[in-house]
Image (cartoon, rainbow, N blue to C red; front, side):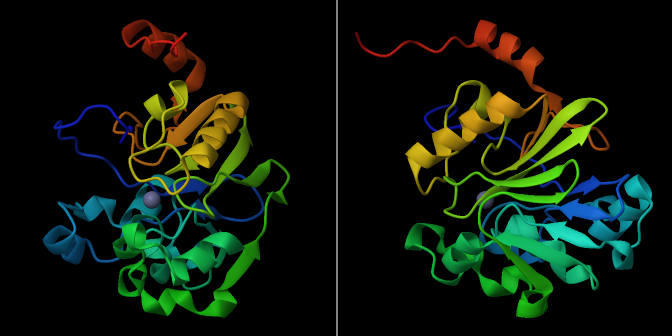
Amino acid sequence: MVIGRHYGQSVTVPLWGIAISGGPQRILVDTGVHDCAWVDANLGPCKQAPEEHLDRALREYVGWGVDEVDIVINTHLHFDHCGGNALLPYATCYIQTAEWDFAAAPLPTQNPYYYEFLIGRESLDHFRWRFVSGILDLMPGVRIFPTPGHTPGHQSVAVKTGDGIVVIAGDCANCMENIVDELPVGIVHDTAQEIASLRRIKKIADLVIPGHDPDVRAGSAGIELRAKLKHIERENPVPGPLG
Ligand SMILES: [Zn+2]
């Protein structure tokens, strides 16, 4: 979760899909896993309760059918962030070109996260995708912006809401601690880029939905950053550099 910390501790983490409602189009950011049973047997413990299935969660939390989602934004193409794309027949999917390219030929350290069958082959039809390079203002108040580091083409989403700017971080931040202490996630492709991306989020966000933070409540707009900054700095001070 956080590089260099909490070794040996076991933690159960959520895989979030985030609905952006209230605009002219129905948007979903990240879509969870495609084959939980295979992941559970082969990669690591993975459980999905019936009410956590994408179709049921969408219906119960947001009131949308799977055939009503217009747009999917995938923060990146790791299997636990795009597995549900296959369930959304009419959605157009947005990804950074750099992420698409890396997914086709990842480094060996990230190979298992990009297995094609875990993403769902049927969801990879080229014509479903829109390729983004850099910042894209998808519509007023919804901005896609690059946050590379965890993967080369990782992106996050900033949403202007009545409660402030919500940043859907994806795996740029597994949990708030990554942002507060500017410490990368455990799986990292480029450490310098990752830290720059964390700082970018820290600068602009009022609320954050990290990729796997157990403290995010289902149905909420994320975790308030400023309150967390004070709390974590008090509980867990970071020592300064040498000299
Ligand atoms: Zn990831």
